[in-house]
Image (spheres, rainbow, N blue to C red):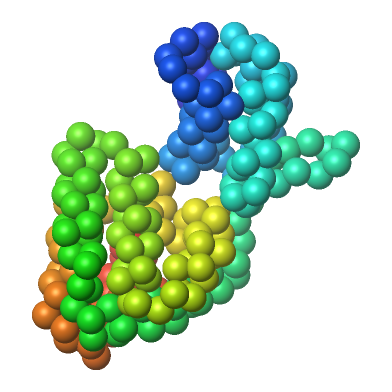
Length: 226
C-alpha cells in the first residue's frame, strides 16, 4: 500500500490536461498492472480522491472502467478490490491464448502479415525503447499491441473480436507480460522480432508452432510471462 500512497501523492492535484476520470483510470490501471496494487487489495474511492486532491466522482468513473476490464471486482455493499488470480484460471487463459495465437499466426504468415509489417515493427521499436528506459507499463502495452495486431493481420475478421473479448482477462491473469517478470526484457524484444520474421517469411507451420509456444510459455519455461 505504501507504493500506491506515494504514487497518489506524486500525482496530487492532477493539473495536466485531459479528463480527470481518464487520468485517474490510467494511474490506477498502471498501478495494478505494475503490481503496486496487489491482488485482492481494497480500493477505497474516497481515500484515493482525498490523496489526489480531487472529487470522488472521477475516481468512481475510473473504477467502473477497471471493473469493466476485469482488473477490479466490485461487490455491492462490500466495495471494490483488485481482481485476484488463481493458478487454474491463469493456466486456462494461457491455453486458450495459445490456441487463438496459433490460428492467428498461421493465417498471418500465409498472408506474410501484409499491411501490418510496418505497424508490427513500430510496436517492437516501442518495446525496445520501453525496455531501455525501464518502463514496464509501456512495455506491457506494446507487448499486448503486438499480439493484437497479429490477430488483425490474420485477415479473419472474427479473430480481433475474440482477442478483444479475451484481452481484459489476459491483463487480469497476467498471461501477457506479468508485472513480476524478472527476466531480460531485451530478450523478449528479440523474441518478438523473431516471431515477426517468421510471419514475414511466410513460414506457416513454423509461425503456428512459435506463437503457440510463446503464448503458452512452452518456449522458455523459466520465462513463462512473456
